[in-house]
Length: 358
Image (spheres, rainbow, N blue to C red):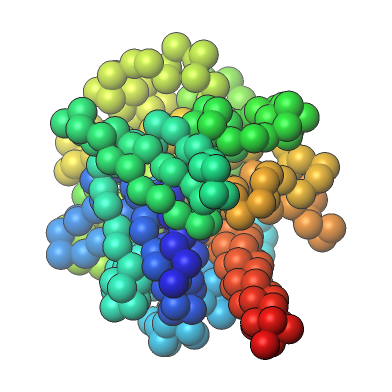
């Protein structure tokens, strides 16, 4: 049985883990954080799960719909009319009953049911290739202990830059390293607020008064679209995009919240601080890549794969990266297909050698 080490327990890592575990591979997933989900991570709010970053499903998300059917949860996607501020028309967007935790939890269940293992609080420090062609992944645990695991394949699901930083033990060409390092990213700061009320029926607002200093790029009125749930209030996201050189990035959560809320009130003066029942701030260092590479970098060396949203370019895309779940789900599926095909070819080649020898 061939072993696959998957680095990252976000959507793409869990999709790879499920597909390969079902195909008979020994699967080990290493996650730096204490919980799964990555950019789709959720928290409890009232008696429901809610994502720390806003998400929805589009009608055109073919890979996600296929995955939902495979897992038997396509009937849990409910469709809602969404109004974008400044646009005359509405569009349908989907959301899982129980939130996207429904999808994440079922992926984990499928992985463990097929013998896969997920380890948390594992910070990968180095990936090296051994003399026999297999790979050694070294990790540091939160208590400073070390952990190592050997595997035949590696799937790295973080940012391209992080991959380069932990791959000094791999025989990557200088050109390959440069191409991966040249993929630059915007960071994201997202304030999720549980409100007593929300002042707009628009799902997403992108335009603000030009004379105001607004640190966020969009307002996402989750509850205006997906209606009342058991959160104990109504959910609003204030989503900002910045560079880590921005002074706001290093501020405390409390100061960022005050900055964001002050700007929010400048857009909706009727809102008061007492309308906020609770809040949660999320920072993502490598949130959205600024451009797609011109060449396919998803397999920088044999049997090592990078499954990153920055590598999901295709001919029909606009060329402007958007961290969309469907593209990374599709790339995860393509990588799994390539690994399974490789093993099938290797197995057939070995059978031919045995037959020839006889």
